[in-house]
Image (cartoon, rainbow, N blue to C red):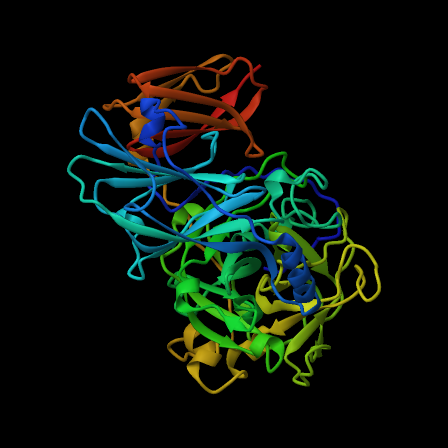
Length: 562
């Protein structure tokens, strides 16, 4: 369908909700249920990095259009045998806990090697307040590589907790690195409000700019890259293929996998994190970080262009797992024809921020990159246009994002450029960006399958050169809906949570508003079949309750009346 109307005034309110989690089993740490003291286990202090030297290196990388580094990896050697504190519970179960702390870190995340959890064991990570809880990670998170990584936990400390049933075999894991985030952490940015991107960027929830792109946005992911001992932000796209079989291919830029003279190794790629639905549902920046969903791990399928110096700068991966339907993924269509597009957008994550949209309404131009010495006509030159809510451009961290034509098909991936919110020297909102051509990715970077997109996106050699995008819709879970009933709904004061035919344990309820902000929390160590929640003190409107218990988690919508 042709995309039109990005410059005209419409209004829309889009409601969506996403759970703050990697693929995991839900639930809560057992120490929360047992009210164990939070200071009676080992703390390991990790020495902070040299931020002065880091700033110098980042300045050089910026001049070379390399990916946006936001964290460095500090090596550690932590496992169940040499670190942490074990606590035996009256029922025979055991709890292992450990705190890792690095002063002045804005956030931390963990990289594991030799990661293999056993049946009956659950791993959680959380902050010192207990408000950010990730997990439970279980044996379903094991991968043949025995590698694993976790999402960011905000603040300078991260706590690990392993809960083991009496009958469980002891698992194995070793933490090899802790990511020390020193910038681009939206949660703590008090200067710009929410997020790290610049003032001119336009949220994907804005109308009219994002109005026609609500399917396509679900095909764009934020990527937490690991390479050469550091972490970087890039963007990428889920891409459809001629079989329409939901193969979890992600396309980004080749230079996103390169840093400090090295490409990401097989082990590095198995610890890349892919964030879905990281966005504002409205044009306004949220007051708190939006809920996110993520996946860990991928394998390289094909690459070409040597960061754009000898081609079109593409990197194709396959995620280690299928994308869950509840992530609402959209597999973007594409065109390998190479026709000039006169209008379209890019959807991206500048500086690792929430999802933004930038528009163009002048014809693209075929060019070679103005840096690096290449003379190959492997890139599109694009100029962004001012729209109703800003003059969206790209920034470091947007690398690898898709350039879409009016039909919403990928025609390029971002290499770099001179677009910026403020005019300064060669940079400014009226300056160009450069996208590696999808038509060049197709089969022009080399003769081998590993240097082309065609063998993977048209595996049966049908000759197809264009394809539509594909929505993977969530199927309604009637069994889950029958497990929990909420009444009355709507309500002005009391809402009853009725657990049908079972009694939940270690219950946690969190109420979120339409912007994804936490409004109220409820905790209960033991829960009856019916739990009463007082909502009389919250404003009228639509809310979502996340019901988290040891047996799993569930989302329900409620309506608060006056």
